[in-house]
Length: 360
Image (cartoon, rainbow, N blue to C red; front, side, top):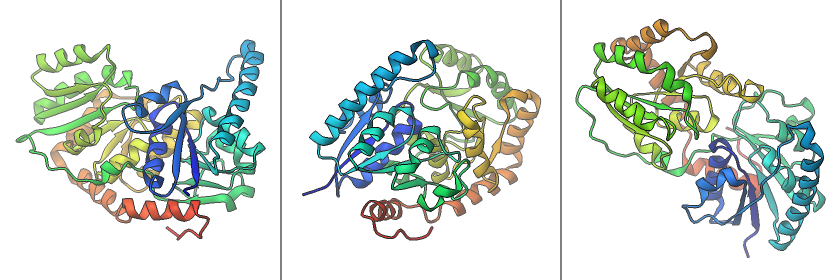
């Protein structure tokens, strides 16, 4: 009889996509249930994932604090019932406040808990539960904000990347068109809609372009019209399940600094320009970006000191001179030569089967 695993996740794609990837790695060896909040449902409902919804309150309003605490107590009791009813042996949390009730319940029931940290900065929820977690699974040994006393719990694996990103597709490349894809994470980035339009028009005068642009539903028609009026071949989209296919058609990506997005671009060997989200907690998007910058795989742009002329010059150099672009593309290839689905699968099974993990 298979052991039962519950994966706790929710919120943005940054939490949910690693949960989906873990599910797909473990599904042959374990019976798996996923817990998410309402925001994570859209990633799970179209697939055959068995999941439940637990909507954890935020603790960011002092006036609502008593109500939030009461709700947390109720959700922890609900989590205790779920863990006992489902006979869960292992709890895996991909971080975020959404996992608090289940992690508390797992502690009460002495269920082994494993924490996943995709970012270069240890998240606050993961930091809170480190004391009674079996292991902290992360992508870098140089994890920022990890207390020294918990370093022995740290296990480094290669980034969790969805299986379809390892599969190569054959696309007919548009003749003489350099393709830029602009993605702002699971919600789209409004700032890209405002900053980049005029620049891309100017770039298209030096270098024929195709633009693939992720945006919000409200801006979709506006952007389509803008690109059409300026004779730029384009594809404008909101949320796309087959983003990997759009990425593989691209030469360069302009993106935020989410850990999952950067790992997926990296495995596809697509150089990227990162605009780290200035308001990201503990500046984790900048630190995610810096990991690739230190390995000469990307460019980082500070949104707060953005200079249109400098950025336009950078894009022209990327597409016309190409030397720096090709260097980064080659460095990405070197970075990922060991990252295969089977290697990550083996590492995860060793961790959860409590065998000694091989060094990476």
